Image 1 (tube, helix red, strand yellow):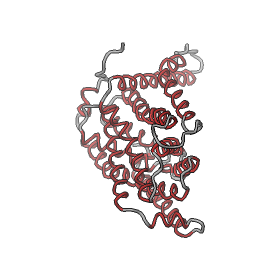
Image 2: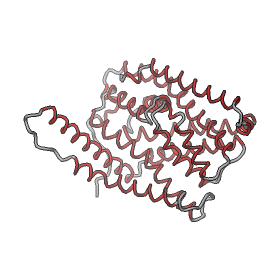
Image 3: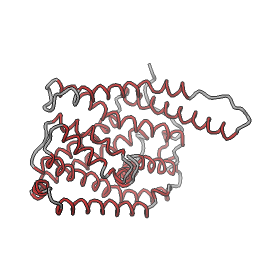
Image 4: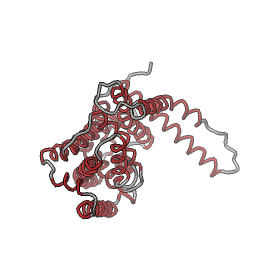
Length: 353
């Protein structure tokens, strides 16, 4: 097991996050100038808090659905739940912008007997399909908000520009397999610097694995895989709903276009390498909503509520799943049976046109 995923390191991360949340709560309750934020947090509606928690549970289940559909549709639901929820907990606790969860999944699938190449390609595909939902949402919501279909700020900068950037990223991703393979052409070995040849071979293999992963993601999307399409959309949509319920709990929900665009752009703060994205995500979300004209005390209180549930729910679901996962993997006798139909990299997808 990677050292970062050892239980004692996870426990340290839990303590760190709890300490940060406690300090933020103390600061909100004690610092001058935050009276409006305190007022909103004191009058939280418990019904909306329950809705926020349920939305985060649904988001986690969407993650499980797309995980199972991408890596092995024949895997048992129990093992799929344990791996995906453990990944979600790692995403909440590790300072890796989501890479911690993927690393845990790679380790678990390897322990379960899945081939390294198979894991590499499907890890890339998983990252692509889960990210695709966000970029497609930016394009669709940005355009529909600009044309007045969705309520929200209709300025070009906050609607068309993000939509255009997202569309360019989608197009680049769609064409990336050819580009990756072009840059990944094998170089002729020199026979002098063997370590350099090994580095070149590793880069070549990595680029081709990435290209294969992008191709697999495209095939899964073309095949309209229920688990991939519904799972990736649910993973994103219910998380947005949780943020909306956080706003409802403090008293005011922004227009739909503003809520979705602020969420999608603000989530880039999660790339800041701190446990759970704490600090970076909150700052980015509040900053984006302030730019979109949302009342700052409302945004601060709502984001604080949302982030509590976004961190706590995956951790509470994932910690027991992680313990059960380790026990299951230690008891597996015939590991190939964990995902036997795909143990030899058979991909049951339509032939390419």
